[in-house]
Amino acid sequence: MADEVLKLLLEGEMLDQHQIAQILALDEDAVERELAELKRKGILLGWRPVFHPAYLAEGESVHALIEVKITPEREGGFDRIAERIARFREVETCYLMSGAYDLHVLVHGKTLHSVANFVAARLSSIEGVLSTATHFMLKVYKEQGYMFERDQQDPDKPSVSA
Amino acid sequence: MPDYTRYIADHVRILPKSGIREFFSIVEQNPQAISLGVGEPDFVTPWAFREAAIFALERGKTSYTNNLGLIRLRRVINDYLNRVFKLDYCPDDEILVTVGVSEAMDLAVRALINPGDKVMYHEPCFVSYSPTISLAHGIPVPIPTKSEDDFALDPDELERCWQPGCRMILLNFPTNPTGGVVEKERLEKIAKFCIEKDMIVVSDEIYAELSYDGCEHTSIATLPGMRERTIFLHGVSKAFAMTGFRIGYAAGPRELIDAMLKVHQYAMMCAPILSQEASIEAFKNGEEEMHRMRDSYQRRRDFIVRRFNEIGLPCHMPKATFYAFPRVSAFGMNERDFCIKLLKEQEVAIVPGTAFGPHGAGFARASFSTSYERITIACDRIERYVAGLDKKA
Image 1: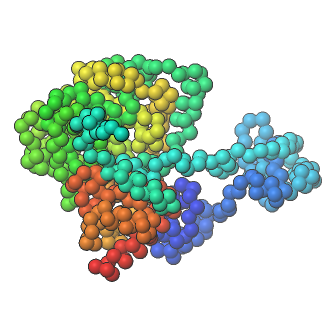
Image 2: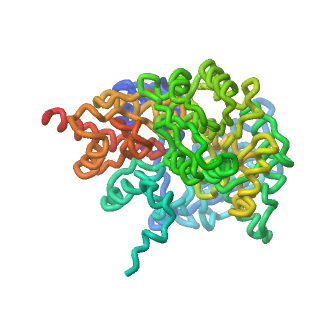
Image 3: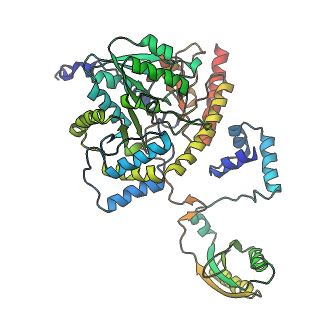
């Protein structure tokens, strides 16, 4: 049942618990229990709306991608430092990468200045961080699977067809 | 003003207008209605297929192609047939790419039917079968399929409807509009009968991949003795969400394909090259996208069929297609009035079953290829509507 709820959510249509319950022939309490259970198990971490970038621009939002090189530790490798970086509220995503650098850190702040400040004061000062390269994001084309220029419902498509 | 009717060919003049068209014009007057009336996927064509067409356009691929279609396309079609249908044809002369399955169907009938020949088909069915036969001066011989059978073709019924002079039978399983399928055992009986009566089988299997619950589709062409008398029809419209690309194809014995090619080369020349390029991408790399869409349809089917039955519109569980075909006859009015009143009172469009032939009487087709939100709202509205009818009854 949890599987069915997850599959439906993954299709990406915005549905409330009532709709989920209707579609999957469950009662609403069951859906609520399922979702609570998924959260308790740490499978479903949470959800948040995906906004059009124009909306975020009004809120004065700056995103930067920071390539971070770190020194792996004898015990635990990259994990301790990576988790230390990831816990900052400013950090939205943090991945360990193969290749030229180690951590791919996506940082979010109100202004260019605040992001730069975060990198200089908080991030690069962590022991074990060897270097950072900061790239500010200029434009978003796709976010979490959503295109901003969406395929429109075609007005020429007939409402009834064979 | 001259009387133009005298300029119009008799067999065209007497051809009835499509019930779908008539209903479409009624729905058009209610543009805000939620439509469960479409006969096509709600998904936009997956980007990779569209991108293939754009790339071809950028490279200046704007010419005619071989009358049979691009050989690269015919080869990937055959690979796909091997993989998905367990069928094998020679891409050089046994596969003909057409403008949708509709053209392929028309070619098969026009190329093989003499005036006065009888052609069988099961009904309710896709709107063009009977007119296609009539336009070729053939005589349509319908075989009813029934709701108690989940709209499968009953071999006994086939035998009962057969008449001397029947030279061809058109099959469409899974069926638009009923979602009917035929189990292998029955299909074998049907095949045997076709061999016995020496009928050519034209099998439109456009919905095959949209089979649910892990049901495996069996093509009649795979049964013993059938490959040599079957023209297999299929295309990219439904499973790959490419209706507007208009690509279908026919596969069959080379002599029959060659006869169809004669008509095709004079009437159509070839299918559009950009659509052929997009279809190559679909057949080669599109199965994952297709399965994603199929799984979504299945979830919506489970919902809408359950709701119809709850609401009091008895509906069998279609094993394939994106159509539910509930009975709407219990309210003292015919299916057409039921649908029109529903549209007027609750702004939901479903299509009267008689648009798909007289045997669709008492039923309506509801397509579930639309968003969950719209399906749930539509069902709530239908529920309110039916509740109101019950009170009046």
